[in-house]
Length: 145
Image (cartoon, rainbow, N blue to C red):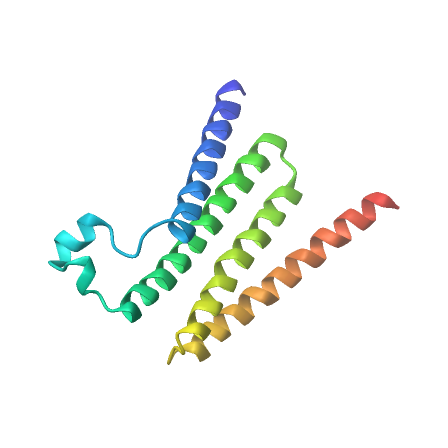
């Protein structure tokens, strides 16, 4: 039992670190790092403002997916520590909302040719959030009665 708790605690640490990396990538990572420029063989001053803006959108989207993944890892760890499915359900909801909302917003901003597909995926995600949220709400209501 002690090793299971330790494993869950390590998983929680991994999830928290993953969320931190996602936040960094979303809000603080420059459009091009020095290694990006070396690899691509470009100089930062030669990048067009449109490319820099697009890269920021790309990294915000990737960062949101990383935050969503980290949130899911944390939710699994909390579930393993408590064996309460409520935390797992809430983690899934938060993960889906963070990842798919940013994905949809990014595709709207860039005027994506695949907005229809992203909208379908976001619609499916929203339906699942609604279903899981209803289950959570019903579970909480039944415990109050």
